[in-house]
Image (cartoon, rainbow, N blue to C red; front, side, top):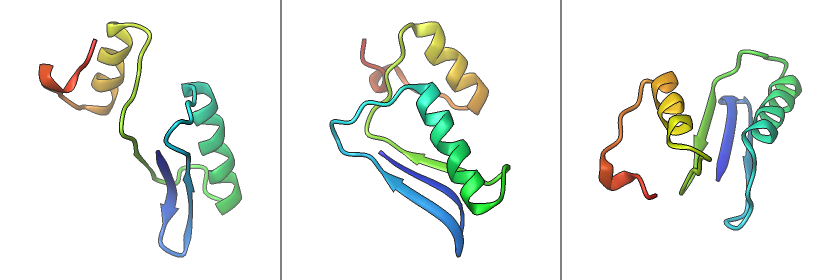
Length: 78
C-alpha cells in the first residue's frame, strides 16, 4: 500500500510492506499526521492498495457509497 498526502513539492508519500495490515483507525491517524507535517489539514489523499478487507458487506457498501464508487461482483471476494 502507498499513501500520498498533498501534491508536488508539498507532499508526503508513505509505503507499507506487502504483508502489513492496517486498520481504518490507524490509517486515519497516519493521514492526519501526514497532513499536519505538510501544514494542510485538507490536503488531497491518494491511496493505492492491492486489497482492502471489511468485517461486513455493509461496511464495504458504506465505503463505496461514500466514495461514489461502484464495483462488479468479480472484484469482490467473500
